[in-house]
Length: 200
Image 1 (tube, rainbow, N blue to C red):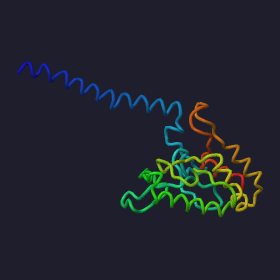
Image 2 (cartoon, one colour):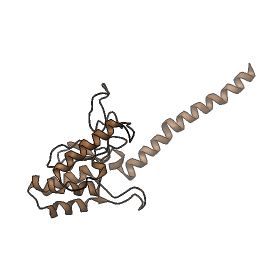
Image 3 (tube, rainbow, N blue to C red):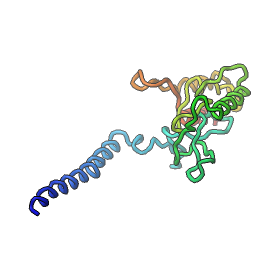
C-alpha cells in the first residue's frame, strides 16, 4: 500500500504542476506579452470603421463579388451543416476541395474560372491564383499579377485611370517574409479599403 501511495503521489503532483504551467501560466504569459507587444495582431488583425464597426480581418479572406472591388482567390469552403453546399470564405469551416490535379471536377472548375476572367480581360493570361483555391479557402492575399489583372475592370467601374489604380496596387505590395519566404503579395481587404478611400 505504501508503495502504491509512493508511486501515485509524484504522478498527481506532476499532473497538477503541468496543468498549472501549460494550462494557465504559459498561456497567460504568452497572451499578456502578445497584448503588450502587438495588440492589433493578437486580437485578430481586425479593421474597424471610425464608429467601431468591424469590417474584416487582415488574416481571413472575404468573398468580394462587386465588380468595383478587387476579388480574392476562389474558395472551396462549404457549409458546416451541409458539406455539399458551397459557402465561399466560410471562416467557420476552413477547407480545400481536396481534388487532385487530374480530377475532372477540378479541371472543369478551373477552365470555367479562366473563361469567366478572360471575358473581363480578353487576350491577357490569367494568373493561376485567380482560378485556383487555396488550401484553407480563406486566403486573404493575391499575387501582384492577380491584382494587376483586375486593374482594367476596377478603373472602368470606378471611372479612374488605369495608372491611378495600378499605382494603388503597387503601393500595397508586401514583400517576401524575411526576404526569402513566399512571394510578393497583396492583401485584398487592405487594397479595397484603400480603393474606397481614394474614390469617395
